[in-house]
Amino acid sequence: MSEIRKAPHDTIFEQGPVNPYGKFFTGTSYLTMLSENDDVFHAPIGNVTFEPGTRTHWHVHSGGQILLVLAGEGFVQFEGEAPRKIRKGDVVRIPPEVKHWHGAGASTWMTHISIEPNVPNNRCTWLEAVSDEDYAKAVA
Ligand code: MN
Image 1 (spheres, rainbow, N blue to C red):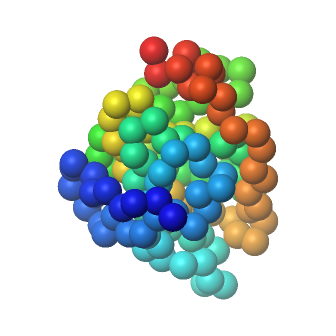
Image 2 (image 1 turned 180 degrees about the vertical axis):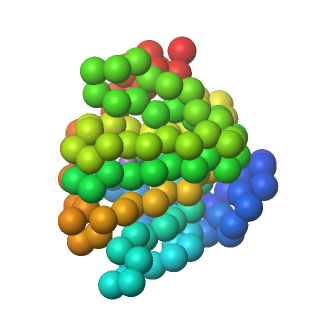
Image 3 (image 1 turned 30 degrees about the horizontal axis):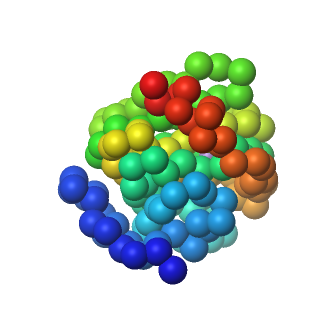
């Protein structure tokens, strides 16, 4: 079990416990669910905080995902595109079926809200880890 460290920025919402989906991440992240999925809204909303160097594996949301960056700096990369730096205040719309990853910078924490719309027609398929080499290239 990873040790809990507190982000050096205001995470707005509770930072929460170590992310139970951690096996699909490299490094340590934290997850607080803000609004659980249900048959009214069909859109689970969670708050995710990434320690420096932490990123998701490559993955695909069949119904897309919207990220609202609350604090810190990180990166998002769509397959076949250059990585994009993301920071507090950014909104990232990830279309359905686009392979991508998101995470912190090499030395910066990052907190974002994740909205997964269109449930139950939104499944997440986890793929390979972002290699240390590819991550280093992205954050350089
Ligand atoms: Mn995603």
